[in-house]
Image (cartoon, rainbow, N blue to C red; front, side, top):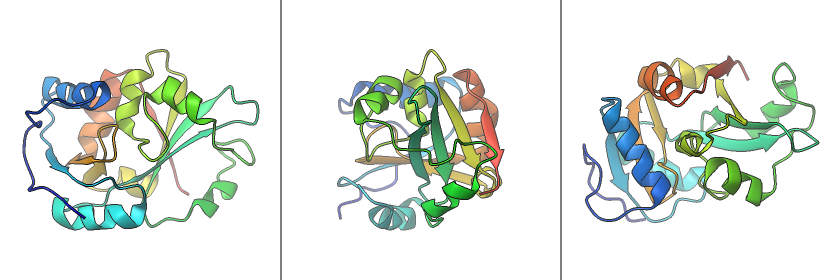
Length: 178
């Protein structure tokens, strides 16, 4: 798998709208970050190779909804935590949270399955998506994610995610212990 050298600034070449929005937002909020480009990483196993280069774990992001597909969640959790924990998370979720149709992900996060990320919240201007972050992620020093596409990945401080990025885009994270 190709992984570029680590950079401390946005790539200069043209990028997609969401990816460019993510870099612009991080810079506007004075959030230092590191970035790599990579071959498409469609699984957490592929992201593990990126982890080694960027120096933090890329977080698992899962887009969920209630049974009626009227309430949406972006669940952010450690890459190595199995999704079976969702069934025990009834304090925040509806029993049996299904995966929404891919068009709902495109509509609310501006991206497609395999690229779910907190970056997609930049497209959620009507605040339809509730952000749920596992306690282990919230307490970690570093946060790793993609900028809305799985061919690039970022690393920045988790406190910047929680205290700068999410508030600036009108989202609050609910921290849960999965």
